[in-house]
Amino acid sequence: MTSPVLERPFRVAALVAGLVGLFAAYLVATVQPARAAEVLVSQGKTATASSTEAAGAYQAAEAVDGNAGTRWASAFSAAQWWQVDLGATTSVSRIAINWEAAYAKAFTIQFSTNGSTYTQAYATTTGTGGQQSIAATGSARYVRINLTERALAAYGYSFWEFQVFSGDGGPTTPPTTPPAGTTRLLSYNKPAQASSWQNDVNCNPCSPDKAFDNDPASRWATSSTTGWVDPGWISVDLGATAQISQVVLQWDPAYGRAYQLQTSNDNANWTTFYSTTTGDGLKDVINATGTGRYVRLYGTARSSAYGYSLWEFSVYGTGGNPTAPPAKPADPTFPATRLVFSDEFNGAAGAKPDQAKWTYDPGVPQNGEIQYYTPNSENAQMNGQGSLVIEARRQDYQGRQYTSARMNTSNKFHVQYGRVEARVKVPKGNGLWPAFWMMGADFLTGRPWPYNGEIDIMEVLGRNTSEAYSTLHAPAYNGAGGYGQKYATADLSQDFHVWAVEWDSKGMRFLLDGNQVFYASKETVENTRGPWIYDHPFYVILNLAVGGDFPGPIDASTPFPSQMLVDYVRVYQ
Image 1 (cartoon, one colour):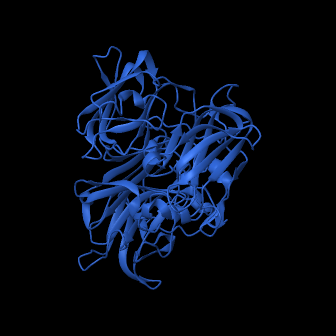
Image 2 (tube, helix red, strand yellow):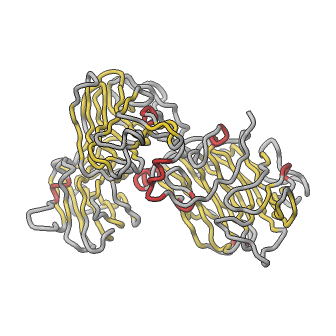
């Protein structure tokens, strides 16, 4: 079929308080990979702390009592600690913290086998609270969290539960059907029901099966006409009796403050195996046990005037009648060295880009840009010195006064995971906007932006070529609200520089000249911004835009023609 015109996504404002997600068109939900068996080893163990907020209340032990309604809270000062004694040296695989509003921005987690000598297992200065799952591995009898910077300066620190797990627990993608009794994802593609569901121009369709389809841009939402009420529910038929050990919920902004997880053997009589009245949205990783063929989320208090909506409802355990989700590619080992795509642009002066590798992308752009992207790569050619030249010109063309070029590898080269890099020299000038980026390949088959995902490896604004941007865009964070980083550097217009992203199933590491400028962790994004929608193939794009909402207007000082030079593009796995 003919590919649609590949327009540059429009840089809309951030989704207001996330609630626009309730009214976006067709969205997605990723099912987290099945986890190998884990054991909670901290519950009921001896806990101590540097302080408590009040005498006889908010004690250290209340963070390991298995009750999500009790918590530890410290005195109102910055330097605090909390510790649990596991009773014996144990192989630790993961830490889960359910923070109260008084969370820590900066903290470390330390392990000790003797209670006197500690080693650091994890550190952060950018904590965001909520429900946090931390891959901290090592041997420990004592697990300590040292808290050094408060989110709420007038208070101390507080968490409802601090859980230490032993066992593999990492994502697994079994190549064959696991042996009976192995913990795995049970809910993928299973029949689903709900109290109601939305199916209109704003959410088409947001049916219950979308919460179980392993597609990170679809969701279930209760009906806007009949379902914005309490209670609201969604259930899944696992196909046979199962032993549930974990449920993962990735909420849309319409989340449940109070809800129950229930099981049933007949889809009529329900037994609650988990409940909360303090739900805070985003990602809930619930380690609770229940038995039954049917699993239901039963919401009794909504977070807003809207209904309930889930991108993802993943049930893990044993038994049932599971269907294995499609396997993902193996993660690369970095530094990746197997070259899977390259263009060195070593052609003769005036030669066009290789049409076996690149698609010309003509037309009128979005984002308020003023150029016309010419067809047949009229504004892109080799210079005979080993570089591709993408040139922006002052030129009357198709009713516009400026031209430039955009080219991509759509339907010629798509990639999932690896190191994607380019060596580029950017132009300087008000209103110029060079970019090296990637789009989710499902855009080519009709999925609209931003539901397909966008990875901006490099964007530079010609008005200040001593700064650059690396950013991710998805339904829950896009446009001005994209998840990314602006970073200061040398004047990038004076020489070539190498931008790269190292991408795997755990996240993306963005680099400039070999130095990390930004790390996007899948776990952090899911816990703080919304679904991670990048575990599928993408294609590569190069372009030089003129004017627009992001770079601002050109002026009399903007030089024309202006050139973006690309020494090479390479992809390694």
